[in-house]
Amino acid sequence: MQKRIQKEIGNNCLKRIIVAFLAVIMMTTMLHPQMVQAATGTENGIFIESKNHEAPVFEAGKKKNWNFVITNNSGNVLNNVTITPDLGDKNEDWPFKTEKQSYQKSLGTLEKGQQQEVSFEFIQRDDVPTTRYKLKFTISADGQEETAKWFYMNTTAKPAQKDTQDNKDNKDTDDDKDTGKGNGAGNGAGSVSDTSYQTPDAGGYSNGEAAYSGGSGGSTDGDATSGNGSVPRVIVTGFTTDPAEVRAGSNFKLTIHLKNTSRMKVSNMLFDLSAPTEGSDEQTTSPAFLPSSGASSIYLDSIAPNGTADISIELNAKADLLQKPYSMELSMKYEDPNATQVEGSSSISIPVKQDARFEISDFEISPQSVAVGEEANVMCSLYNLGRIKLYNVKATFEGKNIKKSEVFIGNIESGATGSIDAMLEGKKISDGPAKVTMTLSYEDESGNISTTTKDLNLEVTEKVDDDEAAASDMPEETQKSFPVIPVVIAAVVIAVVAAVVILKKRKKKQLAEIEEEELLDELERSSEDEHQ
Image 1 (tube, rainbow, N blue to C red):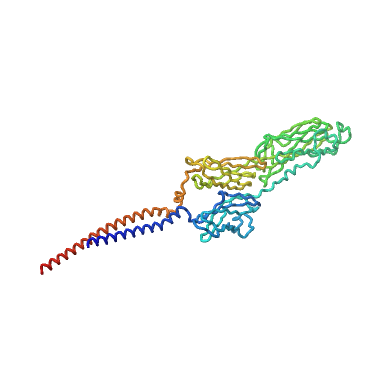
Image 2 (cartoon, one colour):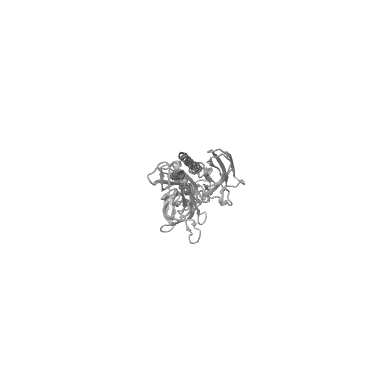
């Protein structure tokens, strides 16, 4: 009987151990899928990204496609997949022309792990400035919650039309070009003008008519013998500036080349220069050019027949002048051999250059450290503080540890701000923060390219395995619950050991009770035998 009892106790103990292990297996099975799902990051269902991580640049009035890549990470087949851009409620929210009530795109069915591209065609409005927009796109599918993601894009303002009126101001209305070879003799009143420049960036000159101040006059020398009443004429044949480029706010020397086109000597010559008045109010209004010392009048003794001469003056260009040519009027008074006074005039167009002035804000880098193959977002602002427009602004990021990246900003008006937004991909592991150089290039109105640089620091680390990266991206609660299986197993082992100990104690107790009962039975039998 004792063996039978021991066998039953052993069977009961084995059953309890089996039940405990079954419970552990069930708990592990229930927890494991959740942990795998958290580690792989498939709870997002659908993943959407701009193709090649591009932040596209749109131009006013031009069509352009924006491409996206959709990936099914849900682990299931998804039906009725759609992607919809949010048009917003105001023009400020949506920089494109709204030609449809909805721009929703349907992708149909996506298999597990399948990728599919979708393209949107947009036209930027003409009134949109050069700036950066942040637009929302929503993606949905049957049985999945809607997922919204924001994307950056850049706009380029419509180029302003250049005003060419200044060029027209200096246009000569005469058809004949003065060659400076005895024109005074055979051209009546000397109405021929020189129009040899007419290029706004190079500057130029033009000549007006000359006439006796008291009438047509006459002469007894040279051409006077012909009796045609010819007027001696002095013209401008060119000019130079030192330095060659006149900068706003700087001094320069103006040298004017003159020629006496007649066959008679002219003398007692007085020249006076006057510049146009520039300024927006009474306090800032003043001539564009002022003598840096002395007066604006120049005296020359004489010029021989068909002779040449130069006159010079030191001038200062007003600091707030716009970058364009400015016309100066040159009035001339001189005498023929009979001391008869003659008056003439010419115009000189002097191009003025403004230096580009701008500032670049501090870089915003997110994150400060990336692994090889990952990307960091770098943003900053460009403030145009000068008086000239910056054309075709472009930022290029280069460094030993990153892939070269270029961002086109477009044209930036005077006083406007341009946004620089780049994605930098790690290429090579760096030893701590590594230098990345941003080269900013821009053009002036003549197409001349200028550059400037600014450095930033970005650390590139070793690429982390997908499992480790997913674990690091898990919520804090998931990370804390990750060591559940070892804890459960340890608890089960402790429970089994405790159960074995308890069963052994019970077995001993049951054996002791059995022995006690047997002993009492023997005592009872012995007592009965004695009574008999």
